[in-house]
Length: 266
Length: 264
Image (tube, rainbow over all chains, first blue to last red; front, side):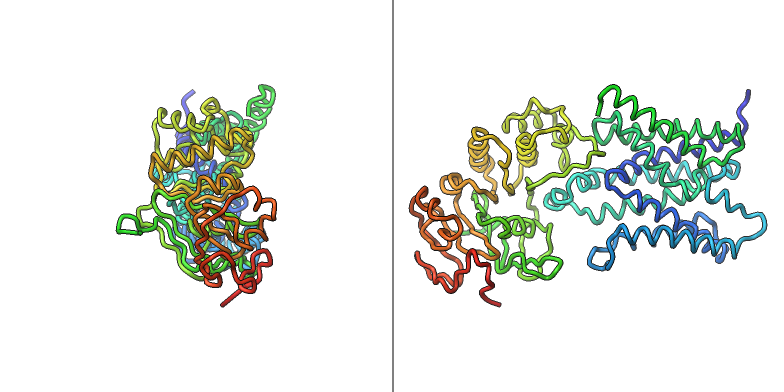
């Protein structure tokens, strides 16, 4: 049968999201910052509230708040009084609660909070696809530009600094790219499951990857497969797209790692 | 002695580094490394050798004093530890290109020099301690550095390999003409292969040209009488304020081993 234009748009948008999520997510896994991804994603609700108040686009509101959070969390250690994991936990849940509170106070009739939290394929428009496609390519290009120093810092911050790189700057760049990815991909995965679209394909790819680059590339392919399967589930059973995609990714993760264990490949 | 093209590649002046709790890890440390020179840091555990190296490389901020590195300085660094996250897949060959690009032939050659070419396609996380050290040294050499900095480069390497690696380090200095700054516990290499020894125990205890390090009381305090017997005489060249030029150091001013602060 002919694919519906709805599902075709959703698929294109989802594939674009997976394209940037694979490499970005690999770095989240390597840098052990999935908590940060969550804090960032949850703060997006504050961005939505901001957009409602200022009557600007939701994407712009989310981007603005995410950039502020990204910079704040990257502040040098001596400006913090609490350990980073405590700060992130507070940020993540505080922002989520405040965002839920504000959006429910400000919400207009017809505004779908569930779509915001869990993604909604039907909400994806033609211009969303275009924006996501171009945005994904820009994010990917920017990540490629800082790839070597970012990877060097993930392997050994000491070596990176000693050999003339600036980990603080490249790590900030990665964080800002995450903020951009969040603003772009929010409609597909929803706020609550954004981080999982980044880390689950990357963690799945780890099972069979032998170098950082193959892991990132494999994460793209796995993410795309999860998007395709998830959208099919979402479409067929009229389920929210975010949970469907993430469940598909989770299934792939289990299969890959079991296969790797059986083949004794690491 | 130091003309325009023999200015130091790296120079620490009166450097001090504090721990987050405010304690001084090192203080009043001055040292310099020139092209073609091997400078070795010795001293007891916890004396601040690694801190000194990290401060010199800009990894740790200075609380006082200054560090000057040649603006175009190309550093090859062998850290004391490498804790690779298990989630990060990394072959030895890929690791070699971590901070610079290199052809496969160049990678093979560097790994051959340290004797681990056979492990080229192995995962870095799977290397033994000694193999990892050899790979780390090969990676640093591959960069063709102006300054090679090695923090206990032969830890975990077997006895025969140790001698071969020290020979390689001396050879690198000769062929590449780079400056070398290293932390070493191998007194034989310190004596035979080093141009200058800097003994660090919170501050610079003594430093000099090691025709033999051994005549100073600080050295005896640090390494014990057994070390004295093993090693021969040494033209001592103190650049330390409290040490008069010569052999004997004013014991009140010399606080090696007690890590008491002396001034400022």
